Image (cartoon, rainbow, N blue to C red; front, side, top):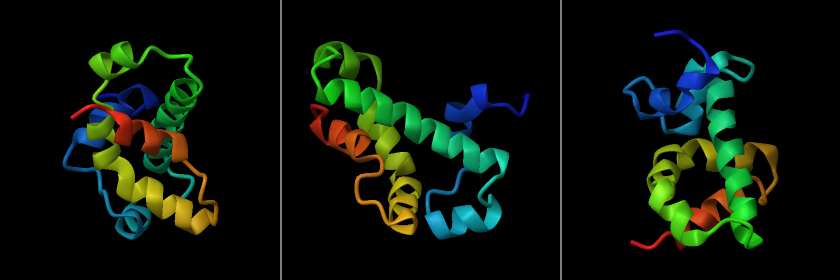
Length: 104
């Protein structure tokens, strides 16, 4: 498998991904390709969350297309850890809100 950003989602679901932020950063420090993959996923989902929040994305289509809450549950340790380290309570807030809004 090629080590590039197009494999970010597959990597997130692999056994190599570490959901706990402190452990993640220990193995994949800031600036590493794997750290970049995690921020790429969170950033893309935050963008979708922002579009969803403003009614620019059809809710039925969104939740039929993507397993948003599953992605959030897998990567939330990283996202919340980065939020805390950055000292920005708004970081990835739209991703989180979108995941919580997904019908169960």
